Image (tube, rainbow, N blue to C red; front, side, top):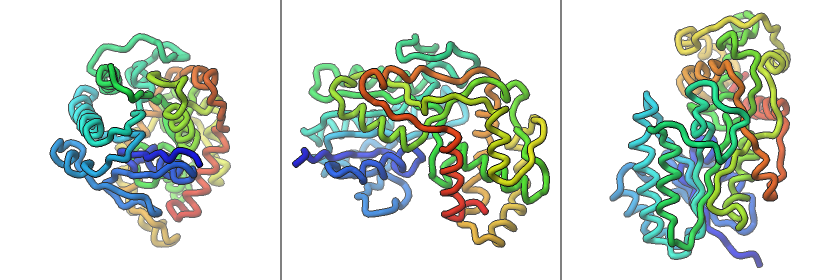
Length: 348
C-alpha cells in the first residue's frame, strides 16, 4: 500500500488552489485538507482561517499534526506592487511557522510564484526567462517569499519547491484573476450588443509571443515537484509548452463564440465595461446564468494582461529535464474551459 500523504492546500478557493485540490483528491494516496474562505465542492476537509491573524492560524492549525505537504496558493491583492509584500509575507510566515510546530511529519512546502520574479509585470524582460535569472529590485513579494522559505528550511528535514506559472487558465468562476472567464464574458456581451469581437489591448500587444499555463497541468506539476527528490529546494517554470500570438488566437476564439472579429481597438476595459451590468443581467435572466456581473468583472486584470506589448515567455525545460513531461494545447484549453463555463451556466 502506498504511503498515505496529507496535503494542506492553503487558499483552495482560488483558481490555482481549487484545481490543485481537485487533482489531489483524485489521487489514491493523498488525504486533502484545505483552507478556504468559501465553501468547497465535494467532501474535502475545510479549515476556515484568517491567514493574516497569527493567533487564529495557531488555533485552527493546532490539530493538523498529520500534514506532510503544504501547498501554499494564497494571495491577497493590493493596489501597488510594494503594498503586496506585507500581507503576503505575513500569511506565508504564519502558515510556515505554525505548521512546523504542529506537524512532525512535514516533508515539503510548495508555494506559487509567477513571472513577476523576472519583472514580467513591469515591462519587457529577458526571454525566455530561466529559473536562475537574477532577481529584480525589491520590493517584490514573490522573491521575498522565496528568500524567507530558503532561510527557514536551513537545517530542517523538509524541502521546498517554488512553482512559476504564466497566466493560468482554468475553471474557477468568480476568481478575480481568471483571464479565460473574462474573455468569455467579454465575448458574450459583444455578441449581445451585436458588435465584433475586437482585441481590446494595446496595439502592440496583439503581435508578441505569449504562453499560458493550464490549471490542470499546473496541478500535476506542483504535485510532481513536491514528491520528486531531485526537484527539492528548486524553482520551476511551468507552462503549456506552446506559444501563440493574440493576432492568430483571437479570431479563433471569436469563431468559437460565433462572432466576427475586427481590427484591434484599445479599450480600457475597466472603464468601457463598467456600465454593462444591465446587459449581463438581461443575459443572466434569459439563460438562467449562475453568477452576477460583479463576480465575473475582473476588467482591470484584463487591461493588465492585454497591455503586454512584449514577448511573455519562460523556459520550461528544467522541469521536463527532471522528469515532468506533461504538455497542454493552449487553443484546446480555451475551448475546454469555455465549454465548462457553458455547461455550468456561467456564460450563455
